[in-house]
Length: 426
Image 1 (tube, rainbow, N blue to C red):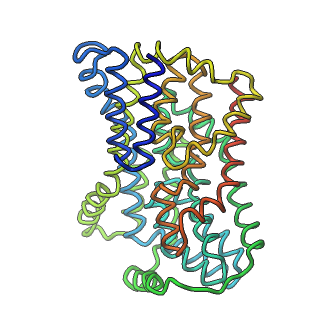
Image 2 (image 1 turned 180 degrees about the horizontal axis):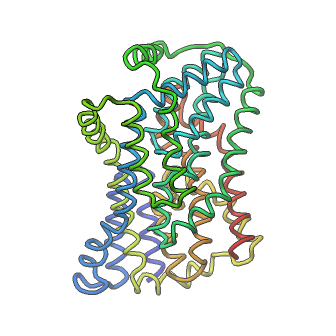
Image 3 (image 1 turned 60 degrees about the horizontal axis):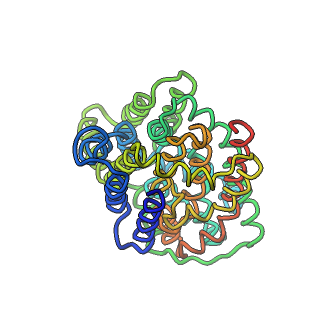
């Protein structure tokens, strides 16, 4: 039975890789088939309809709300000019020094990455940052990679990500936060190293091909002007509350939204701006919310008693218990989180993580280390991820070029995460 479930999972991966089915649809179909193969009844306890679909769909509800609030805050950063002002100030400070400009844009991308992820984060930092970097001679692939490496450096402090791993792996937020603290230095060091190495190794290239894009920052600036200096603190407000005062994730993000609104908007315009950006955030958050509904359904399916009993001996046989082998094996498997592969945590990887925990093969915190380390790779180098596609296309290169240039750096981040995981939890 376990072999049949693995074959079903392989078929699901193939459907996602070939894009015959959208990821969310494939995960739901996969979950239902796994439940039936595991012997789950149609209704009742541990059933397809009541457990997998009814209970699984809203299982990640807190994460969905966090994603929506992050998208809302991202829309405010855009509409109020906060993100654009941050990038412009950095570019003005850097002048015609390519490395300084790139490091400055990297810093802004990191800050934006703590607020929201995916394409919105790339756009907030990249609409001005990518043209500015290319204009001072930074190669196009390096410019796109700088945005992505910055977002990934901020990812360990992205509050919706904390909420996702806390809910999906059934861990306290404090535990997730503690591991993210350990992962952050690796992500930051890799991002800075990427900028320093790639800008010097590739040299200066004065080639500009984004003429249509160059007009956007100018018109946007004339329309909005620079945001007040104190409004630029908006991205750190949720972090200060969540880290310094241990305020819960959702209230911390709401506080950031209110701070952005109060520091940039006249009282008579607040209601309209709040509603406008809230409605806009639904459009941004729709895709990830649908994906999290599907992931919740898949997690419910792989945690069914029949599925756990069938998969436990097979998964245990191929899961290294020795810390050195643990690091070596999972480091070699890093490419399997690319192209929506089986170790992508926002796909079938979530199901595999659920099996590892439900079967007791690894402690939940060790699975957290695996999932978050792989997520650092996916968030930068996966040619199918929206932030990678947007950044590459906006810079005038292909996602595959960005993948080849950034993969060695994020692979090293994953290695660091695996080492910490093995040393701390195995």
